[in-house]
Amino acid sequence: MKIARTLEPLQAIASLFYPPNCGACGAAISNSEHLCSSCHDKAQRILPPFCAKCSEPFAGAIESEFTCANCTHRKLEFDAAISAYRSRSVVRFVILQFKYGRQLYLRHPIAGWMAEAMVDARLRNRAFDLIVPVPLHPARLRERGFNQAHVLATMLAQKIGVPVCRVLERIRYTTTQTAFDRSDRVENLRNAFRLRKKMAVRELRVLLVDDILTTGSTLSECARVLREAGARSVYAITAARA
Image (cartoon, rainbow, N blue to C red; front, side, top):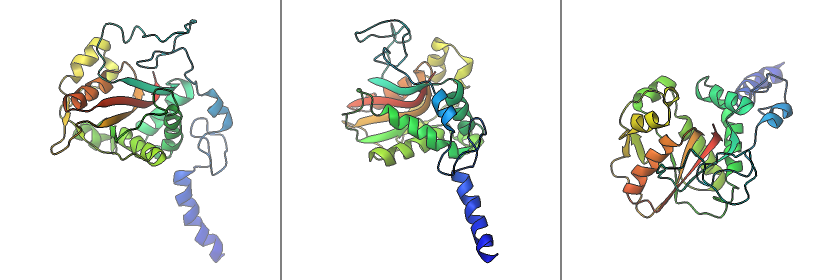
């Protein structure tokens, strides 16, 4: 009886990290998993051909490197933005549950998707000096309770051995980007970020982290600030591509 009572709190703590049900469909799973095999299989992988700049997949047959319509005739300040999965179905549900539903244990499969993106040829043999999460405005941070980009950046840092540094801050509260088209997103983000005081990125190779890439406007504005501060390169990685 004493042993059982001792195990109960330990099991309760473990369930915060490894709930006994799939985070997407609710099916029973083992304590070492977060998603069932069926939901894992439903995650839509981004496969070639895709845009070399933003990873937007292309349904046709293209063998050479190309730039998609999203990137044509606009200046994106990052060198490339890499995602391994589409923000569809299971992937989108899991990210939204983590981000807005505060299901923090779902950071584990999401960080796993991000780690898969690191094997992309655009990143695989590239060295980075620091990982920079896209910041939230302080008011938004208070509303949500955590910055999902910083959580994912911290987990990625543990996997690849590169330090996380919050060199950027968001100084203007902006309406959620989901309400705008591409041109309005750019205007909505203008001068929304800046380098934090006493932070330096001159000649550093930066890996910028966020949860989902839609048009790339947020990542581009962050990359612009980093480049103007002297960053040598700015690559971006997200868990999913809309």
